[in-house]
Amino acid sequence: MSVALIGASGNAGSRILEELSNRGYSVTAIARHPEKIAALPKVTAVKGDVFDKPGLIALLKGHDIVVSAVHFSASDPRILIDAVKEAGAKRYLVVGGAGILEVAPGVKLIDTPNFPEAYKAEATKGSEFLDLLRHEKALDWTFLSPSIMFVAGERTGKFRLGQDQLLVNEKGSSISFADYAIALVDEIARPAHSRKRFTVGY
Image 1 (cartoon, rainbow, N blue to C red):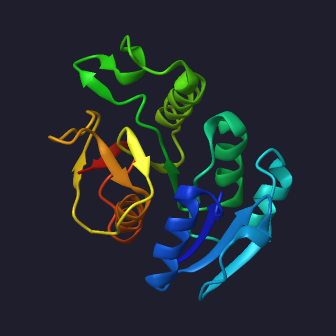
Image 2 (cartoon, rainbow, N blue to C red; image 1 turned 45 degrees about the horizontal axis):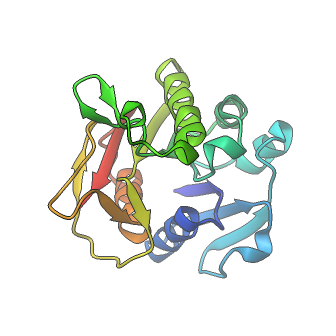
């Protein structure tokens, strides 16, 4: 399968790229600054702008799967979704956020009193993105939310999957970029969350 990865030079995107390459996928790695993309087997780095819909469509055409690992506040979900559909990709996977996971029935993390103000705009845009996806009739999408602490760390391969509820253990709520990448690429290899949001954490 051929994969187009939008946001391939970022913290999450670069780990997803490495995981895809290690598993033998052919990847078109898209970023504003392709020179920042690591040179890896079967990876082609290209320059792309998430606000340039015609340009995105051209870059995405011919790929089975599109993954977007871009900040919600630095992109337009409608442009991304429409570009994926018009390019004819079979599946679309989105790197989500923790803020819109539930911490109690009907209560999202973003709505709790101690949610940091600095992250509210990003989380709100992520919520809008997920709502748009849930209304899509023609797109096979998956939205993978990380835990609260989404950080550099080991690739352990040991983590839990959940659905709409935030995953927490005795140390809090966390997942490394590398282990998140495993969960996302596992979903590409063995689809289990078609037209669903799920989450990953320790």
